[in-house]
Length: 289
Image 1 (cartoon, rainbow, N blue to C red):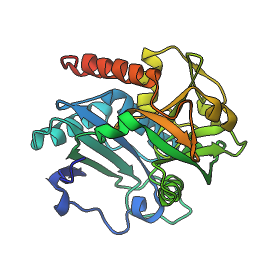
Image 2 (image 1 turned 180 degrees about the horizontal axis):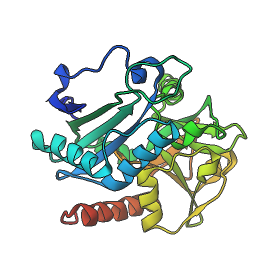
Image 3 (image 1 turned 90 degrees about the horizontal axis):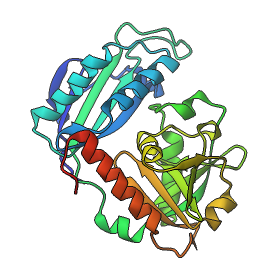
């Protein structure tokens, strides 16, 4: 991944990242009162941009945040932010907050929501991660499947960050979150897929799962079942792989120090990544490869 910071569009002004700012009293800063999306662009084309924008706008509706632009205008803002630095492969983060003002207990719409788009170069995860696979730990943090925040990308991301930090301290790449019933929900920034005797299954959204854009892309290219998955199911699986928009398809080869299957990336993960990249090439107008 590149360390270059790129450009940020903030409420109509496009500046270098180091010059961009929002107010100190913005509710996104004070309370995590907002939503975000992370979008991967290939050859300058954002993958499934409409799905990301729709999810952002849905999240804003759930949080009762007024939407300052229509979807078409937001598409244009994202594309223009990418184009200003002629970025080819990039990560784009879109954030919408309630803006400044209001009391802590008041969700009435602010007069001026804050809309922020940050584009930066992104060259992908290290290749050796895909060939060796990730390790994960089941963390103490639980996903509350009764909370509406499970189903949107809220700026309040501390459960995920605490879980990831717990796993990192123990030497793992990722953390797996169970819900309050003890069923597998998701990773800190990933959806989970399990392979058993050639069948691919993933937890349903009602188990506290964010409906990931990459998750849906996998469902589009594979025959995927949705059912609740226990921790025992995960440990006894032939394969497990993780998905998100930036990493695409990542094999998970161990959990809490125990191997999953043979403890190496399996054929379904490689085949799914191949199909996923073909889908990206088709939808983004790229030559396959």
